[in-house]
Structures are given as C-alpha cells and as structure tokens.
Length: 120
Image (cartoon, rainbow, N blue to C red; front, side, top):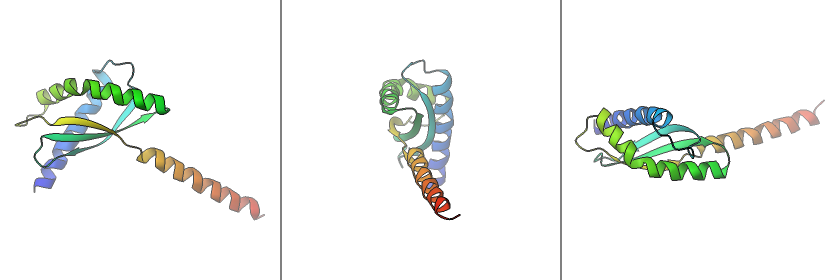
C-alpha cells in the first residue's frame, strides 16, 4: 500500500515541478527541461527528480546548476500546492536514458542500412 502512495506523491510532484519550471522559474540557464520521473523516499523526506535536457553538455551542466539553485524555491512552491506533513527535499539528477535510447536507435539504423546496401 505504501508503494502506491509514494507513486502518487511522485506523480503529483512531477506534474507540479513541470509547470513550475516552465512558468515560474526565470533562470536563463535552464534549457528545454522535461521532468521524466520523481522517486520519493519511503519517509517522504526526500525526492530525487530525474529530468532530461535538450542540448549539448554545456546546456546540461548549466541546467543542473540552475535547478540546484532553484531547489528551495521549488520546494516552497510544492509545499503550497501539495498538502503533506513534510515537503520532500528535492535533488536533481540528469536522466540520460533518452540520449542512450537515441544512440542505440542510431546504431540499429546504421546496421539496418548496411544490411540493405549489401543486398540488392
């Protein structure tokens, strides 16, 4: 039962963070960010926010710095919207699964292209 509650809290935080980052955070270092998943600890005192960023390594690094700097603001805003006994401390982690997926897709397409070139 506890797992379902943690999932619901994580989904609520994910939705709210997406809106807050899009509309309320005015830091120019934040690029095109997508909150992909929020993992909430069992005691709901901390939450790891996984996000993806479009752009190069510099854009990803700048976005990480900006999100860490905005963590306090985002926690305060989350506390106002989601009624919990304690608001989780947010930590941000870059989710590189989309990049890895695109890389694997590219490799598979290259392999498929080489097969088709060899067979008339």
